Image (cartoon, rainbow, N blue to C red; front, side):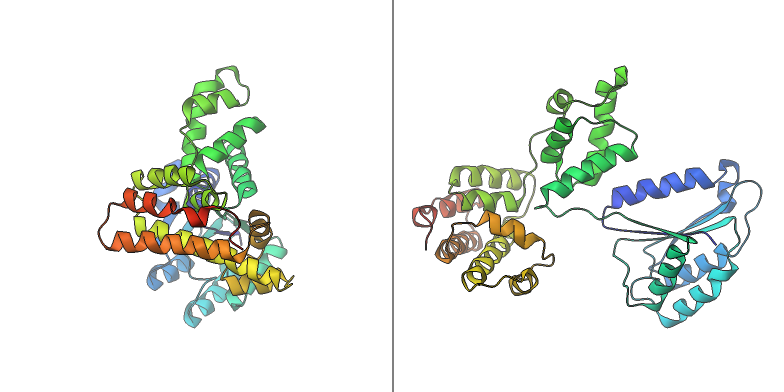
Length: 334
């Protein structure tokens, strides 16, 4: 009863895992009859996946049923849950059911609990592929090193850090850049070095969070340059404003609650609307020494930018004028 549960928002890594499993299990000569690809968004196809998983393979190799967007661990209807529980004991040894979904399995569902019991018993395999948040530098570095490992490539520490800074959390681009780098520097069989990354990979990745950090550091010119890069990459101006507003409001909440003596990061995260409480530790370091007035002033700047954009101003001019408002960029604004 081989069951494979793959989840996480790293679509590129999930895809590589599916491709690898197909290569391991399916005899190419029998792929047309032993490999099925179905879409769990359609209830009929989810039920069909369970039916096909009970059918022994033809010819050589195993049978593999791939169900993308699997509903079985997320909002699973009762009838499908019943079918899954009835099907699991009937899956032949040479048949594999691969359940793939971007969302983390809902541990409250009975289907998830059933599959987790199989994982603990060694009758199912669970693999997660979460993308790190754009503020999580350590997580982005781990994503680069893990992707290189999955591709069978060696990567020097300095090269890993440079690639992480250049690409961020773009998993598909990381894999593409690594393959390109392996062709460029792999003739000698050694690991990819820093010089190769600097020669072939473009400049640093840019996000609205980096813009906010530049504003917080009192570096309007850097903030304007980063914003121009985002606009040139096609990022909508109002989306940049919304991201910055959310970021600075989060800083404001953390600063105010710290001033009140609140120590529970879960309480702070909930009040600030931050999904991952671990981010509070990072935010505290970012805003150390800053008062709430500074963040209110930055929010005022963003309000000016938003008003200018909605009046039809050029996006670049709106950000330049708003970010160069001197009062908010001097001192701590306490």
